[in-house]
Length: 300
Image (cartoon, rainbow, N blue to C red; front, side):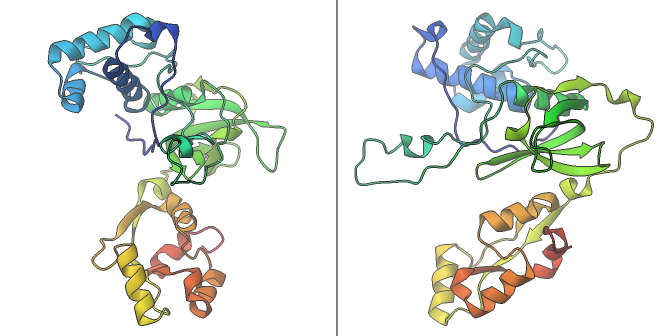
């Protein structure tokens, strides 16, 4: 099964008349079933038993209930791997296709507490049906065709892509894919697809695509408190972020720039100069900067 590094902030339970009379516990298990079908590409009773500590009989009943509610979402039981797999027509009803949190999600948990305030995250809108089709394309190793909008083509242009994975950073979820139009691997923001992708068999390809080493290979990033801080400052930052005995962080090469930017780490030589003259601007630095530099945008 394809390993897709997808990060989900929270499940989004969508209420419907179909759910009336179903207990909260069963709804959460149905939600989990759908999450597994969408992102893990399969579900079986053993997975439910391990996750919720319920009996195998109860787990089988939950899967049957989901099948009764949405029979079009499941293929017939696969006796080989002893699981149910999502159909080509799979459409989620319990979980959100949008990997980014809604504008109000940040406030949800503390909405009744006047002593705690949080800053909301802006959500990028995403067309319905996009994520299931992309996940199916990754699983089946198919190409896709869709209209994609960008700064260079804000009205949209048809792109033929070979998806390889999905990454999520802050409020930006993007698809890692080989672009046949530019003959290279690129990142495509999910919210900028304006049509549901059409799956195309990759058998028509005359030549084998190059390996996406930037996605497949990782870099071990060693983080340290900025040595240009005063001693008390270095101690503060090391303690605050647990850097004293921290293990290196393994990041895919193609995601390195996003990791640096998201965590306020220098992303170019100018930032490094600023980190020396104004160390509190970048209180954390990368000890093995030279190992990472070539994978940052504009520095390679």
